[in-house]
Length: 169
Image (cartoon, rainbow, N blue to C red; front, side, top):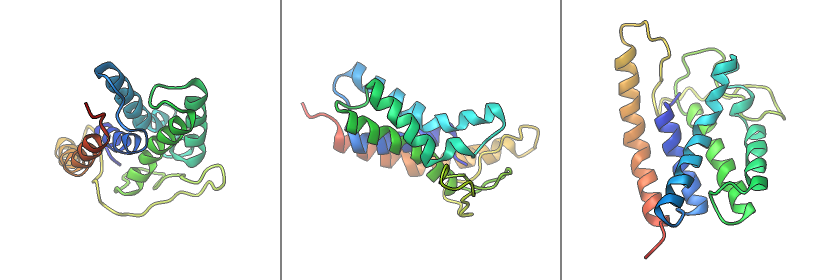
């Protein structure tokens, strides 16, 4: 499972890909903060012991995107684009998780909830695992190796999307 940095970069890339980069420094920073937070938010389920379940799903993405569009979160100018950018930023999280080694039960993500409660697990190792087992000797090595891998893959993608979708002056 990717780190919060990896999830943020993935959410920024898809959010900017849909909505473009907001104009002005404060608008762009606000937009980036919201998209990054949306990309990390599914992992808040760790606080209630339901990791990789309902929050890692299409159903949760639809709910959050609907609230974002209704409340006109400042990620785009139209409700349709707000909804799409937020939904895809949210969905980047379970997709990135599915492209990583899962080291904790339940294995995989409940991506199709509420239609299905089954977990999807590819077993692919694109991003590497992030360990929450801080007591292990290799904790730092595992996490730093995975973080470097995530940044090496996702930072160039997010940068290219930002460069291509930024406002021209």
